[in-house]
Image (cartoon, rainbow, N blue to C red):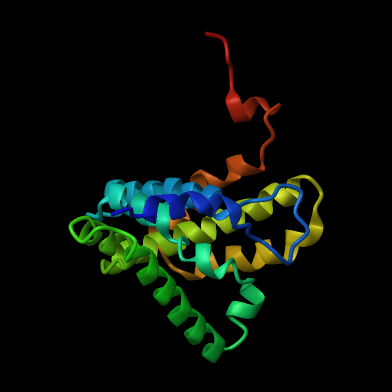
Length: 198
């Protein structure tokens, strides 16, 4: 029998994000998944090292990689539509869940259980970390667009930053204070790369 789960995963590169926004740099859900994985791993490490946590950073990263995989079927629904009211949000969550189940059905029975806890995580701390990482990735996208004078993302950036601060999540606050400022620097800034002499 032939299973097409992994071939479908490779289709994430064809699903673009930010459909309603004018973009200077397009982003697909494959690229976004990597960004969220890096950030989720970082937040989990910060939580463990600085905030007394005991979450698995590698598991957080894996969930980050696959967190938008359902959009292979659904596409990236703009936030302004997805969250316009509670009913639409609830129905869209159902559609995403059905899409995730469809993807999991593309795996052999003996391998499927290894992916169920990635597509449908149950650890509330890791779920919160991945959601925070997803919002951080959106904030970073806004910063990158604003750096090249694309004002399309300016108001959205303010809203996301406010949401992140309201999460009252110590590891996110640490990231915002210690790591986020570097995203506002340019490559030519000596504070960005320092001395490259080897």
